[in-house]
Length: 129
Image (tube, rainbow, N blue to C red):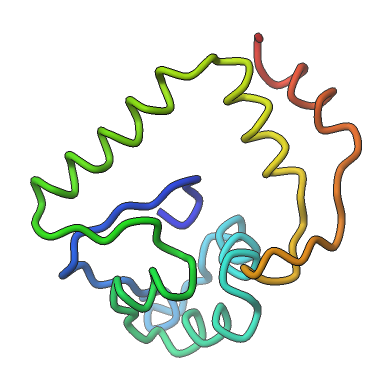
């Protein structure tokens, strides 16, 4: 879930990383994504303590986009978001997502550390526009 562009969860979902208690590392790709989304201190807390995070806290720190009441509302919200994006022009969505992924941020506050200047070139090579 933490590798997703948009995240929708039910209000009684439990978010946590159990890997620490199983002596397994969190999958490598997720560790930097988590740190990028919530900042290094909170990412370390979540991974090293294996503590649970409520959906509301996830929303408050910018990790979750929507918290819904009940499974049906969660599915409906996720489908609404998906259909809204699918109705957009493919080129615009591809370029926007690629541009977001080319940014390296210090924290979920949006402080940009590095911007990949060739993001349009990488968008054109990764997807048939």
